[in-house]
Length: 118
Image (cartoon, rainbow, N blue to C red; front, side, top):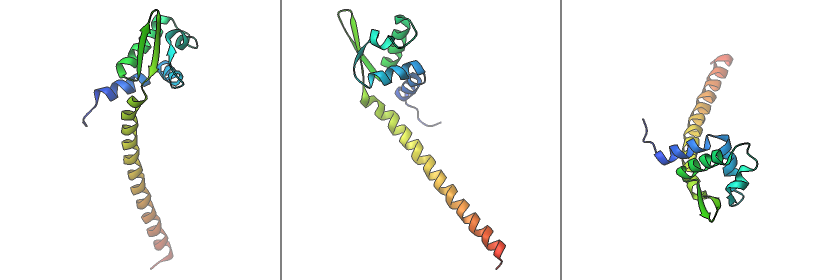
């Protein structure tokens, strides 16, 4: 099995949940406090906090509490690892598809030659 990155696993696990992805999308527009993040979601503040803790453990989000207000911010550089992994996967599959295209093209040429004769 290939070497795995625990931080990448935590990141993809955090992004696997639609609620957390919605929070990340909201935070991509700028910092927000927990109440603002909770408004469009149909869940309690403690449930929102659990989702935020998951995002914080993954490193995608940080928060800071000032008084009674907790403000959350996205950490855009943390997405670089996921983007690099996805780019490697894409390059791998594109190379495989290129080889398949070349094989199919050779097969078509052989089929055409066999139909027209020597």
